[in-house]
Length: 129
Image 1: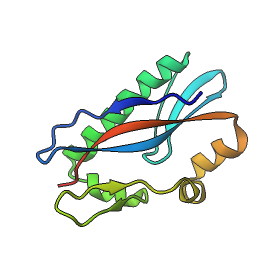
Image 2: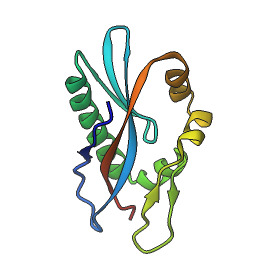
Image 3: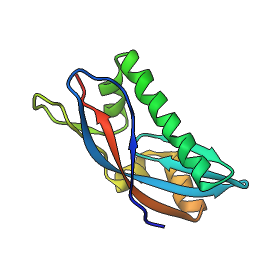
Image 4: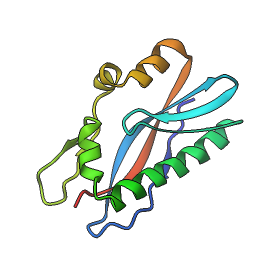
């Protein structure tokens, strides 16, 4: 299952958005379908793959809303291993999968204990201000 799609965090940010491709890991645990993005440590779940994706989209939007409202967006991204450019738009690059496997215990557990499918999704991220 290698579908491409678009997930958008609809957070109004003064300077806009930029697009980034992120891995979305889909797997099943205890009879529940899960969609997980290790680069953002955000997941969603449901009884079907579609429900899991919809739940993920809600979780992603809530994550963006929370860190934007708390003014911790840039700090959270750096904490998760993202590289932030120092140009005027402050675009960000996600950590490579190898780094995520090293640093993210949850992703490492999923990778080692579950069968999964990896999909690439384009996400609209707010530009750090």
